[in-house]
Length: 152
Image (cartoon, rainbow, N blue to C red; front, side):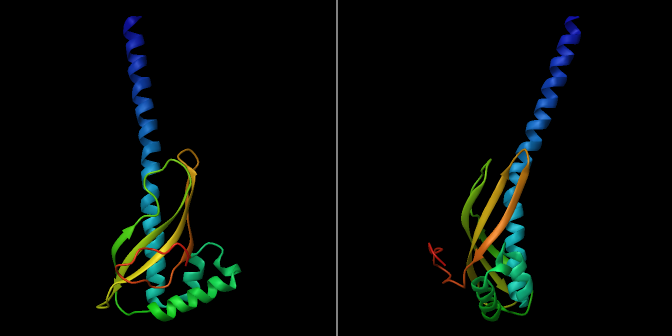
């Protein structure tokens, strides 16, 4: 009887470890999802694909000001060549819950000089239900050494 109890405790411990590992992996993957969404956005800008930029930004199609900003971004940032991300400063660090913050991305296309932009990001959800990353707003190009402004 004692041996059965020990085996049961070991099995329960292994199961608990696996559940906690899976939840932690989900929480850590939200940063990768944010980076992917921002990368897709700047690639659409560099390609000059205004419709894709509008689709990348949550609710942009319903806001004339957002569509105008997307048109201005595409016009100013369109470049030939492959896009390389030089740096992404995430909108938030590790979090088990929802966050709202501003990410800063530096990127180059082809042989161009770096372009730097700010992206307002909402991470919603939790480790149990999963996370969702929404891009809410993108700035025009800012100076390479500038911090993201409070309003853009």
